[in-house]
Length: 264
Image (cartoon, rainbow, N blue to C red; front, side):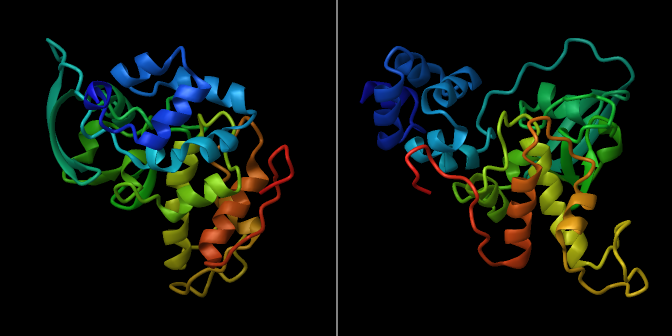
């Protein structure tokens, strides 16, 4: 009971599974939380990240935000300081930032929202994609100072409490991630893609570009084109397309993977 008080977010089922799979690490997990190295070790033990999901009910862990995490102390000196007031994942934030600071660095270094990843830092990989006023943006190319009065949503704010967004659930179902590094950007981009298609926004491969305002039915080709700015170095593209197609079509798409024992 004392250990649970130190880390109240760990459920009984998660605690039991971790004690069985990682007895040497359980005390550290209880004290400081589930770290990336722990999750990677789980993947090693279980064979795939989805099998770890099956064991741990990781859906709820993925849906939790870091809103309660302690924020890093502000820098002692800021050059070219600019005050920025905006809303992050439903929470109002007021930051004094360097006028040259990117939104990505502000999220990661000032707000402890580390879900958005710094991949290429040149706007070419999409790992840092977030939503600004509902539109997807590359946070590594967006200055934090330009986000005044905007509503920014990161991967931490996609879920509704402990309930996953349908896109997150579909990515898990269809194994749309392997190493997971690009996944936050992939999911944010996919969520925005659905809104763009619903609003009738055309892509390079849309045949009826003159029919503005009408929802676009997303074919696999449309999905690939619209997601082309998000790179997956593991090559999970077919599974990502299946996940988006399921959420867009509002009907189930068959899984193409199985566990080692043949179950789904």
